[in-house]
Length: 72
Image 1 (tube, rainbow, N blue to C red):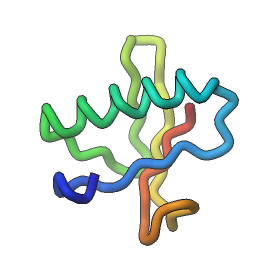
Image 2: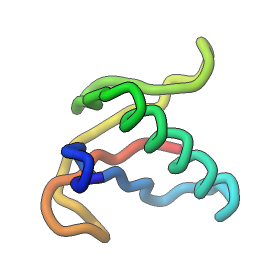
Image 3: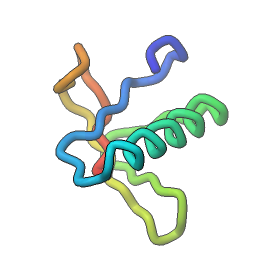
Image 4: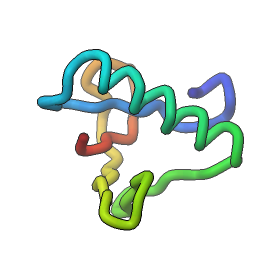
């Protein structure tokens, strides 16, 4: 995501299947880059009115520097 001027995104401790996780990350990344969205610490994101996934910013677990973590 840094190549697009955006924060890296990580999903930590998810119970989602690898395929669902991959699809979710592709959809979120596409949304952020295509619509020039800036995700912020403390916000929520989702693809429906009911889906509200928390976003937090902290030191990266698998990526160097701060990253956005989405609870999925």
